[in-house]
Amino acid sequence: MGEHVDGNSLAGPLSELFAVDLTMASARCLGCGDVSELARAMVYPDPTGYVVRCSQCDDVLMVVVQEPDSVCIELRGMAWLKVPR
Amino acid sequence: MAVISRGFTGRGRDHTPDLPPGQYLTADFPVLSAGPTPDIDTADWQFSIRTDDATLHTWNWDEIHALPIEDIDTDIHCVTRWSKFGTSWRGVSLDTLFADIETTDGFVMAHSYGGYTTNIPLDDLLGGKAWIAFEFDGEPLDPEHGGPARLLVPHLYFWKSAKWIRSLEMMPADQPGFWEQNGYNMYGDPWLEQRYW
Amino acid sequence: MSTLSERETRDAAPHRIGLWHAGVVVSTKTESPTGRSIVLDVPGWGGNIAGQHADLRLTAADGYQAVRSYSIASVSNGDRVELAVDRLPTGEVSPYLVDELRPGDQLELRGPLGGWFVWTPSLPGAVQLIGGGSGIVPLMAMIRSHTASGSDAPFRLLYSVRSPDDAFFRSELDTPTPGLDVTWLYTRVAPEGWGRPPGRITVDDLAGSAFAASLSPAVFVCGPTGFVESVATALVALGHDPHKVKTERFGGA
Image (cartoon, each protein chain N blue to C red):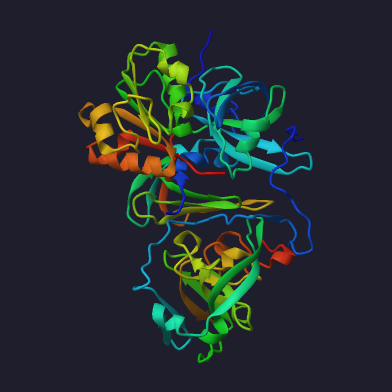
């Protein structure tokens, strides 16, 4: 079993980039159409980045790579991201 | 200015000639994964190489074990900064698997069960530098570490040694794989610290 | 006397949760053979609600840094923060926090983090808490918030530990509290004469001791990945609405 944690663990790393708590945002998975809060997604962490996958179909929603001078965020698997205000 | 935490040293940051820059030595074998561990029965397992003319060269579990099997003793270096010295593996050299394959393409995309991909120049897979490995430390490679079989390219950062290897696809030009699309280096030489773009 | 409109409130300088705050250890307390709670004073923290977590950053003398996330056991609107940490034998940070850290030491915190795995006294309805090991920590914050606010929402806790010695916050949980019902589960060693043989949490444990799905309780599950996985699956099998079940898995580092 691949060891993963919940999307709510992203609140810290994402707080470096966004003024709102992005774990409360909902995303629609391009793979299966599921709409869930980012907090419910599956996160595969490692010290240089993390892969966020849909909790329903395992498809990749988002990939984040933390480089020394920048952070690369890929949102390949989301149709949209709805941020509450 | 960061606050120093009294008595905190973190993991040892060793400096030995065998350790590439920015790496620390570990005795255990950390498991890092970009996704769920695929459950692959060796009865269903197959490995293939696809060449430019779309020809598929395929080996099943028994066929790959019928090829000459080599013992490999090597150091491995992960981009997440751990290195492990003197790991021992058994597997089939890619020189053996490529022996009957003709190709004019210079680049390879490795594909895994589970969907992971990574790109490697063909020259880095030949000349006794890469294997399809199915044993680690005298035991069958466990699924967490990429079993039943993984690519082993120890002279590059370990993300190039794709777990759960399924196929190699020849490419005329270098294309980025899963991590490479998001900022990891296209080549990944640990001695040059080629971690990112 | 004027009040800010909602719009103006939003335009006010945001509370920058992404910033690191220097904190000082006020006290530590042994909770179990492998774990302890740590009270910190973090000027500028500004309080947190129940269930949130903090990122902790340690810096070695040579500049090396390590960052880990820990749940917060306390609820306050001030600068005091209580964490509780279990030592992972191969961990890089938790052995330092459990064995080495002492009052007066400094470290940095970022937070409070996470607006999803949280409970506030304004929420109506029954609450089922299910914790494994040090997964009790954010649930303890919810229990404390519930008690302090005088909320009349019925609370139940199922707390699974290896043995009686491994329980965090034992005396606090053993103190009878109105509106809170605590069920202990032991996986390896149970107290003498305990009715249930030691073993991992099962569907029957949940069916017997947790609020029924028909009451549609808000459910919070926290613990190691395997524990959370099996509890969440069992809850759905018992008819709980997956949208009412919130989980927090912790990895090992």
